[in-house]
Length: 232
Image 1 (cartoon, rainbow, N blue to C red):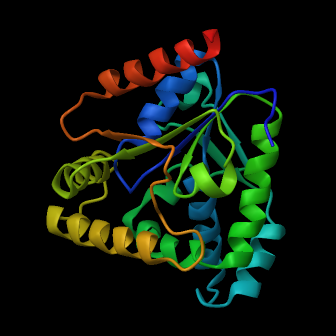
Image 2 (image 1 turned 45 degrees about the horizontal axis):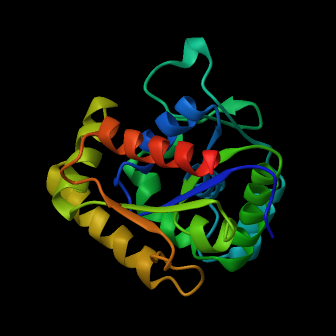
Image 3 (image 1 turned 120 degrees about the vertical axis):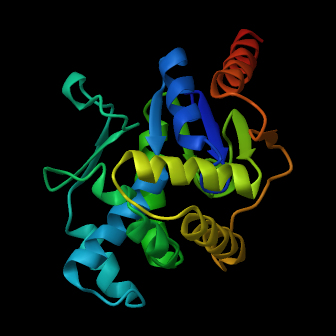
């Protein structure tokens, strides 16, 4: 089912540049940027804070349902490197959900069908009301299967691990490159082998390898393509 709004769906593995690129593309096009991964990270944070069993799907669903999760573009006083501002019951958790501790568990939470069902519903409602650049792991085929433009951003293991390691260090999280690399490989395996909505490349996706490209080069490629599509 098509919508009157332009939808850009972006999938890809962790640290492929999805967040930064999506944010910049959205800014240049005047679209809303939606980081769906942040929603799963919020769910993971809720589980950790509550001391809930990560395998207790019903308990996790209850936590998500009872929490007020909001996402918005960063305000002037929030220009600290974040791509989006995430609030849970009024608390700014934008950086709390970006730790390696959360990264290590988010795949477990995201694997629960009922949790994904709730969050996918919220994501689809957002995309029906405005032009969006939405990124995650299952956007091109699960969340926005009829998106105007589908993109799969990827990159080599080493390049992605270096990016994530640098990001961690910049925000005071002192982990080794090997720890980050090993966790990245585990995340990749979990994402691709997940029974429900595994990470995959759909036939009509535009695959962009960001390993040897600068961020602005990728942004320019996408923005130019969208302009061509909108003028057709």
